[in-house]
Amino acid sequence: MNLLVVDLGGSHASLALFTDGTPRASRRIELAGARGLEPLLPSLAEALGELAAGEGVSLSACAGLGFGFPGLVDAVRGRVLATNAKFSDAHALDLSRWSVESLGLPLRLENDARAALLGERAAGAARGFDDVVMMTLGTGIGGSAMMGGELLRGRHHQAGVLGGHMPVHFYGRRCTCGGVGCAEAEASTWALADLCGSWPGYERSTLAGLPTAPDYADLFRAAAQGDRVALQIRDRSLAIWGATAVALIHAYDPEVLLLGGGVMGSADAVLPVIQRHVHLHAWTPWGRVEVRAGELGDSAALHGLATLFP
Ligand SMILES: [Zn+2]
Image 1 (cartoon, helix red, strand yellow):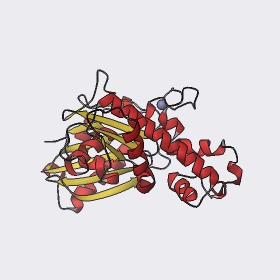
Image 2 (spheres, protein in one colour; image 1 turned 45 degrees about the vertical axis):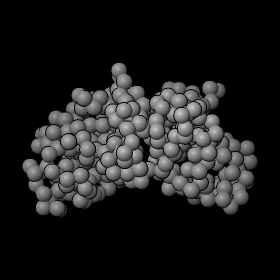
Image 3 (tube, protein in one colour; image 1 turned 120 degrees about the horizontal axis):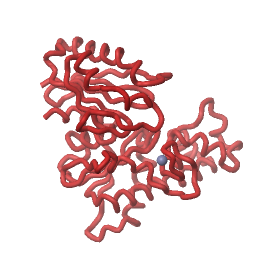
Image 4 (cartoon, protein in one colour; image 1 turned 180 degrees about the vertical axis):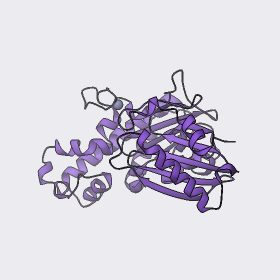
């Protein structure tokens, strides 16, 4: 069976063709400067058609389109419910209709973090587990939870996906969601430039001399070289991620906690610290939650989306 999938991210979209659950071809489209989702749809449809055609697969030979979206979605009705930053027009779009009219394919929509968990369970670090929490550290902090083999959805489709909006500092920074001191407002890539800029002594840090605003790879590199401010911000970020991990474990009672997202490109600096924090501070009298890095990286959500058409 052939399937097309799209994982829409903040800065780019990843497209792939899967055949019998295996990725066969993929493509990345940069979205810098994109103002909304609607203007992107024609080029997405065109690129999907080209991707299939490049493999000699006609659209009529595909079973559907899996679509991952970075926001709150109603997967049953196939509608975007809310997004707190980019693609603010998405809730008004009928993506199922667009998919049928432009590609002739039925569409299944899923939150991108839920899709990543489905992918890691199908083909990555969560194989064989039915109770899984995933925390993705990237531009923001994403989350998803599976209990008893079923994705957690909740009454309004937002259960499990707001892990990055757990308050960790109740006098903290304003978050894009309207909250105060959310984990992602205190320790994620979008918050890092502001966090660095207001840090005492930042002007003397090597980070201040970088040509662009630092990301976490820059921060970990500077910390490894002994930069004092980088060390302090690194340790604060790790403490916030550790506290968020414990909160997620207490909320959802998983066997395994997966860490994913772009920040895990620096997994050596992150994974052992979160493991230690969880094993010291999570109340799990039955034993220890396994804390693992995702295995599929950027393609986890694509693999998950390919499971939406059984
Ligand atoms: Zn928030």
